[in-house]
Length: 260
Image (cartoon, rainbow, N blue to C red):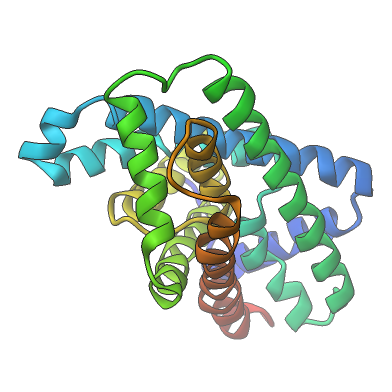
């Protein structure tokens, strides 16, 4: 199976970031909307499958977590193969061109801001229209599953969510990174699947995924407020995601291979 070397991979990531930085605002928002929706679809699938097996969760919680992790990668596969703009992936591959001074900081911040907003809208679209208005999660055990997920995510401390955010996007950014290395569709899917499955199974915090998980639970009446969602989860998860993607992936690989 052909793949690019780490040095070539950094060059590919740099080229992709430069291309994205020159995309129009309209197209960036469209691609970001799609990415948010795709991640939400992966989250909805994970809840439908993993949340529908409470007996397994009670007897073998590790297996239930693995099942949720096994199906959630649908979202990132759609983003990478279909072509969409995901904030958490962009935190990584926008850093090497910044280090090599081929991209100004303003271009990075502009892209991150637009993509974050578009991801939020896309996630809410799926949460409200496809997951709430359809009533897919209204019955037991899915209702208890999704509300329990949201309540757990908003009850952890700021630092705990921040640390879990680092872990989540270190793995998600590596999934995007490895997908750049693969030269065929099957290789890209395989490269994406393992890291994404791992972060979900380990219970880490992905900001864009949480733009689906927590709002849909709020729509279904979970004991969670919008303020708690934004301040207790989304803010620390996003900050952790930036560290995991930009520093632990983009920066370190850019420092080693960026001049190659």
